[in-house]
Amino acid sequence: MISYQFFPLTHNSAANARRIPAVMSHPAFKANPWATIREHAANTLAVAEDVKAVQERKIAEAKRVEQREQVAIPSGMVGIE
Image (cartoon, rainbow, N blue to C red; front, side):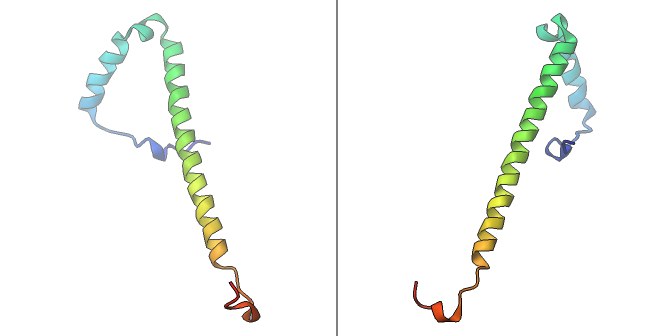
């Protein structure tokens, strides 16, 4: 399941009122509305997956750094670096 936290819902009816006529008058939408909607959805999901992948990489790197910092050095090995 895809989290939609990357795409906050806007409840700005003025912006939506301007956007809907622009979408409906677009030549691609006029030619094939379903294909245009499908393409938009695929592009939107691809962006969400890219953002999620970047966040997952950052979390994994932070965990690796934290694990490296928690490595205990035996008392006899202190100062040998």
